[in-house]
Image (tube, rainbow, N blue to C red):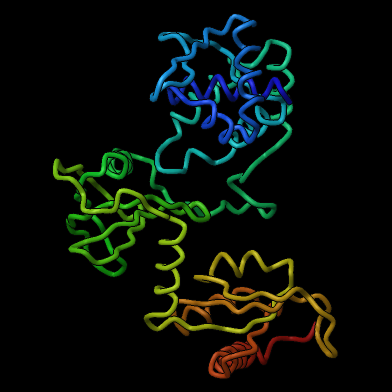
Length: 333
C-alpha cells in the first residue's frame, strides 16, 4: 500500500511541479505527517525530492528527473490492456494513440510481470464486432479520413469549427459551430456544440469534412458534459413526434429491442403473470414515430407484445391479419 502511495507522490510532483505538504496530503488522502515521512523515504531511496521554504514553497523534483517507474499493479495493467483490446479505436479517431499507449504500458512493466499481464489480457474480449448470431454490431464509420481529427482538434483547442454535415433527410452543407465536447454512446460519437448561441448535437458519422478556424470558440471555460448530455437527451425525447410504447419482451430478445429504440425510460424485471410467458421484461421505450415502433416490434415477432398505445396494437394486429390472409390457403403440415 505504501509503495503505491510513494509512486503516486512521485507522479504528482512530476506532473504538477511544486506542491505543498498539505496539497499532497489532500491528493493522497493521508495526513501531512505521513507525507513528510514519505518524502524522507523517497530521499533515502535516491529520488531527488527537495524542499523550498517560504510563502510559495513546497516540495519539487530536480528538473529533468525521469523514472520508468509507473506504479501499475497487476490489476491496473490488466485493466488497461483489456480496454485497449476492445473497440477503443472507434472513439474519436484515437486508435493509433491507443495502440501506442498500450505498447508503452507493456514496455513499462517489469519483465516477469509483462508476460503474465499480456497473456491474461488475451483471455478477455471486450465488445467484439459480431454477436453470437454472427451479426456485425452496428457502429458508425467515423474514424476514416481527417474530419474527426479536425473536430477533436477544435474541441481541445477551443476554436470555432466548420463542418460539412448531412442532417437526416437533408443535403450536406457547411455549418460554423462553437464546439463544446465529444460524447460516445454505444459506439456512436456525437459533437456537442452551439450554433449562433443555440444548442446543437451532431452525429460524427455524418460529418464528411471539418476545418478548424482561427477564431476562439464562444464557450464556457469549464463544462459538465454528463449534465449537458442528459439535458439535451431529455429535450430530444420530449420534442417532435416521438412515440412512447409500453412493451413486454422475452429477455433473450431484449438487446435487439434496445438496439432499435431511441431510449428506454423505465424497465421492470420479468415477473410471473397469469396467462403470460414467465420472466418477460416490461419496458417503456421511445421510438422515432409510430411507423418506427411498428417496424421494430414486428421484427421481434411473437417474442414481444406492445401493451400500449392501443393504436400500435391495432396496427400490429392489422399487419398480422393481412399476413395470415396471404397464407390462408397454405397446406397443413
